[in-house]
Amino acid sequence: MLGYWNNHKATAKTIDSDGWLHTGDQAEISDSGHIFITGRIKDILVLSNGEKVSPADMEMAITSDELFEQALIVGEGKPFLSALIVLNAEQWLVLAQKLKLDAMNKHSLQDKSLQQHVIQQFRRLLHDFPAYAKIRRVNLSLSPWTIENGMLTPTMKIKRAKIIESNQHIIAGFYQD
Figure: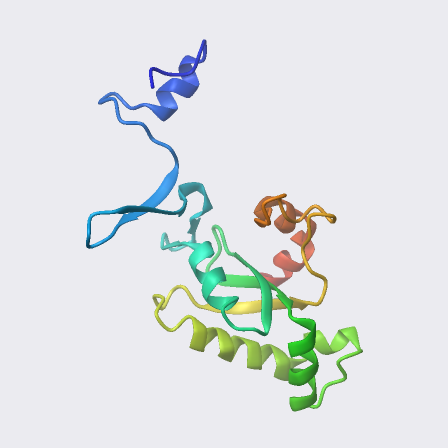
């Protein structure tokens, strides 16, 4: 690649002085020497203490549990991580019964015992992550992110910025204490 047509600024940002092309991809090299694209560098969260966290890896670990349908980790510039979670409706009914909560009452999603249960589940699911990559606050919902509501791309990827923007009041509440 020689650069962007008539855009020296974009070219300088993408191709460094040694000629290396900076794609913005995050990758890892396997033991066999294969390169795997694992995410985007701009998707990395930097906590207020300078620690860097890959939210996509954590979100994948969380959604490996059938209770959690969708997950989005937040915490850019903050002292700790928080999560916006969409629960699997069927699994929510089972868990609500187990915790003696009214699954039909939307306020049950804010119940302290449920919140503690979910945080404990996160600890189990994220045990391989560093200590600073622990989730301390969570918001639970039964309303999925979809293409129709603008929260997913046509390829079913979450629109991180859009979800954060539409949940800004919830996210701000995570960090008020």
